[in-house]
Amino acid sequence: MTDLHRHYWQDMTPQGLTADHPIGDAFTRYATTVSRDELTAHQNRLFMRCVDRAWKTDFYRRLWGDKGIEPGDIRSLEDLPRLPIFDKSDIMASLDRASPFGDFAGFEAYEQRPPVILHTTSGTTGKPQVLLFGPKSREVQNILLARLYRFQGLRPDDIVHSVYGHGMINGGHYVREAVTHWTSAVFLSAGTGVETRSVQQVEIMKNFGATVIVGFADYIKKLATVAREMGLEPGHDIPVRMISGHMGREDKAAIGEAWGGAQCFDWYGVGDTGLIAAEGPDRDGLYVQEDAQYLEVCDIDTGKVIEDGGVGDMVCTCLFKDDLYPIIRFNTHDVTQWKPGQSSIGVEYRRVEGFMGRSDNMVKIRGINIFPQGVGPMLDEHPAFAKEFICRATRDAQDRDSFIVVAEATDLSPATAQAFGDILKRKIGIEPVIELVERGATAALTQIDVRQKPIRLIDERFKK
Image 1 (cartoon, helix red, strand yellow):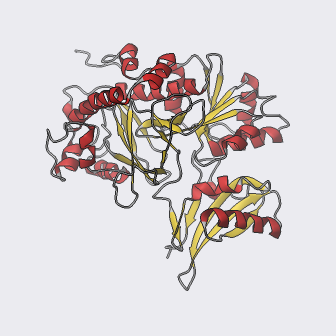
Image 2 (tube, helix red, strand yellow):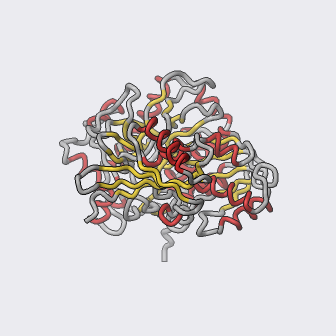
Image 3 (tube, one colour):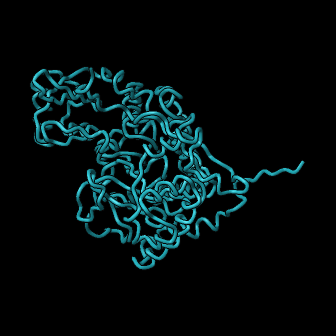
């Protein structure tokens, strides 16, 4: 019998991948010397390969055909606004239409299917979504993340402790591949607090001398608290000097201080796309990885492209995904805005402000748009805030909406509640109801010990 297996590296080489997407010193040289014309030409070359692949998938033939787009209509990125934006709901509909893999991957275009990497999303915004990667697009994602870590200061002798989750979800596997394939650092794949208990994680970090932590801000903060409860001093007993993860609106200085003065860096990406943008050593905005990702900021209501610094949804086109599951104009529903001005370190890539909340998790209370993820960073300015919180939106019998913030605090006095309320009223424009609780009291609601992304909003207004 003929063996028809294909292997992961069969149609690519590391040298070929890094020619289009350099890493290490080669990336720094490229990002600081490339002209806008050179970058646009590079983007267009990769984009047209993705368009060609997309036309071979049932998903895009249907999505684009329904809008009257025909092969040949799209000739460059200048034509991108002609194409419809899609989001997770379209992917979930594809999965329902052609279970279990959907019709967005484009398997039907291959005489012999290439190797497939399959994961799912965490399901924090609903039913978990299937994520499919071909070897080439997967490895480019790994390069993008590894080069970000190296650009931020990851050293060959570092010990990296990861709190990203595993199982079917993508995060922990993706981060492990990036570090182990494209750096010399040692990787500790601890996972979430469910996979490895918090106390055990602290012991692992101490025993192996962890110098870098990667993961989501909420759990990284929690581990610093657990370490101190165990009688350890973060930064001394555990020599962490660098933290890189999904910080969003979190106070990076406060997180770094919790770990003994470690430098704290932010980056942004979603499961479908991999890394999209990241802070560099200047920590002054997130550099969109423009050799690999084309990012649009679009109006939340109209979908029109915003260029003037306004707040909108991040809509991403992956310029490297020309194998399985092309991604062209994917609305992440994560909100940001462009950062004006030039880079102080000479990087030519455009910058965004970072993750500012989710447009599909935004609540409108008395005409004010509120992003619940931003509440914690706002309260960080008060010393009694114990770093954990959850928000509730309620509606009374007179149809009046209220915004309630349940916050853990070290001082439960009315004066502290008043101070919290004053901070939030100043920052968001309405006066919330403040409920103060002891440390750990919100954990059952936020599920911080079992979820990579804790719940921050319970909207009770429409419950029957």
